[in-house]
Image (cartoon, rainbow, N blue to C red; front, side, top):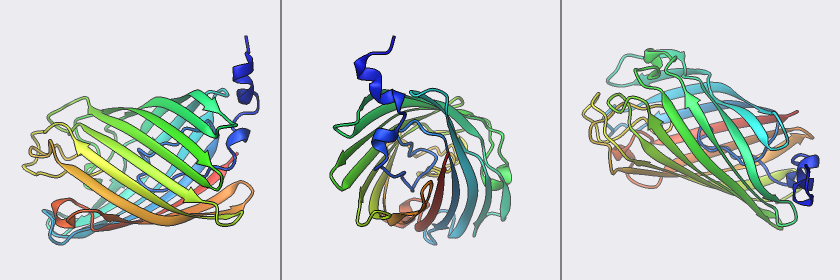
Length: 274
């Protein structure tokens, strides 16, 4: 039976139309909203010259899909697409990315207070191409909790995700967190800032490295446990039409770039709502 507390679900997410979607780390930065949309993503990722890979770059093109099964439950396809990988000490390669699917459930929402909390889980297969630093011998289970809160023209989103490999020797377990704050400068344009973090929880036994492949994949590094990565992204979300918006961020590490595998990153994210 439907109760008064559930009335907001009758109109879906209409009570949260003022919120915009995050941009950076799109695989793990899951918003809490139950919507049907498509997100077209392009990422250019520069590898530091002083890192263990001695420089290079990664290009990634993907399309995320989200489908509202009910007013509370959504099917999410958060990872797919194609990558081009080229470091200065490994051969250039390209290929398909691993595929990740999951479910997201909104278990708390208050439209008047502009607050919503959701949770869910993703499953990532190892179907991708090893030429693009994907595939491997481990799948991944990724539970997450996501929330959003609005204050006047300010909107905040935050997500915490776990990455649990099914084969601990071939991939590293980690905790990923993401924060987003935007300001409604005009009706269609919002500047934004995002903070991203990764904390590695376990070692693998594939490569003798103290860093991992950030949010893109996992190298099974044998010295990664206990290490952290922090980055910030600055950018905007621009509403091009009623159901189409363009987001972009320039992301940079908040510590020595040489200790990890990110010099800087450009992310472009177009959201089409249905």
